[in-house]
Image 1 (tube, helix red, strand yellow):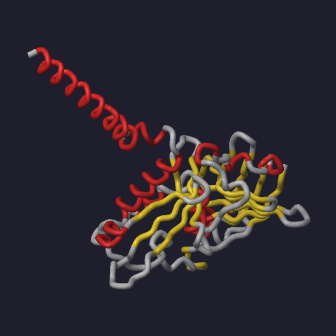
Image 2: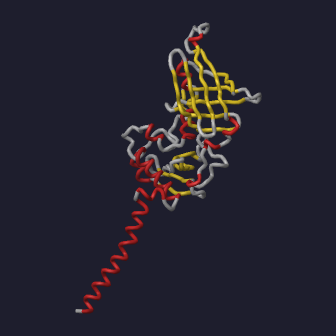
Amino acid sequence: MKKVIQIIVLSFFFLTCKKNPNSENLNNIYSKDSLVVENDSVQGILMLNEFYSKFYFDDNIKIDNEQLKSYLSEKIKFKIDSLRNEENYVLDYDPFIKGQDYNGESIKKTLKIISLDNKNQFRVSFRLFDNKNEQRVNVDYLLEKDDSGKILINSILNDKYLNLTTSNSRKSLSNSENIGDLKIINWIGTYNGTFLRLKDESSDPRGWANFNIKIDKNFQDFYLFSYVEEKKSKLKLINTNNDELIFRMDDNNTIKIKKDKKSKYTLESSYIDSLTGKKNILLLEKK
């Protein structure tokens, strides 16, 4: 009888030991907390799997572009928008499947995601229709975390239009650089400008709109005042280099400030274009 009890106790002990590690592994991989722990490669793979399952596993459902854009960095969102405007419609395919049509069930069945050499680079591969002898489509991504820690698609490495990598981009997901800190020190100041708001009223001061853009290391603001409207907006810096700044306004309109070799500043704004009904390049005075 004593031996029987010992066997039962030992069996229970081994079953318990076997169960616990599996529970811990499942918790580490599938819990919400797993997105902020340990392995950047796992985080990236989970994010891309979620992205494709949400938008490409069912071709009968229309893709919600606003929801899709929530998985993209400001940088690549701006680039996609700029390649799909009326004056420059270059991106006439879906860059996330490298085509215009697909079978959702085929993508679901054949989807594979692997991490590449750098741990914030990943390859997603699948077959669009799963036909006989059909080659797999490969889409290579660079992922980065935003300021809140959310993982976003920042670049498509094997797309000629959307490979936006720079020497600063090849970093760990946990150490991505805030674009707002890049070279903005040279742009600090207030930029003033005017434009004709009311057509055929150039001789009347009320026909003109005044605007200014304040750029500081810690904030950027846009303010416009005219006889017709008043507009205030915070600006989010989405791209910068030595001679250009690009911002996104609260309403998703964009503002681009350029500097030429003679240090003359000009502004292009989709918001101002919407007010005037035409494309504008406006002179700026920097103070």
